[in-house]
Length: 155
Image (cartoon, rainbow, N blue to C red; front, top):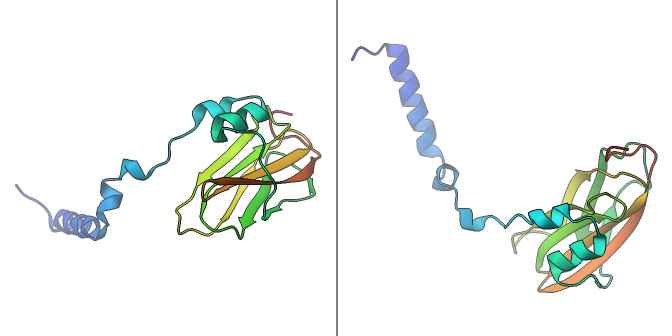
């Protein structure tokens, strides 16, 4: 086997780089990933989506802050953040009532994480944006109406 000096250096550097990676990067732990609620993302009815995801559609208001524009000029890219001071947050879910599929995002959080998410969502038309926080096995919600001037869900 006749390897050039350059090939030997490439192999050595590649091996050194791989050796420094944590084992979790090379062999991901599948048990740490939350189940993807595919059927709920396809659900067309808001109450049914809430029922399928949480077992109820009657969720009381809680100490949750939704930051989103009052008017979204382009519904294809609406920045939304959700924060809460409630302890023990397990998940944060975003729904848009008037979207063809109301569930737009579902985040499973590490118990040590802060109760905060930020993302961009699509909105087809003016609608309430609903945040549902699950913390210590209890559900809390908040909503904010966002006016959309140009729809982002094919509108």
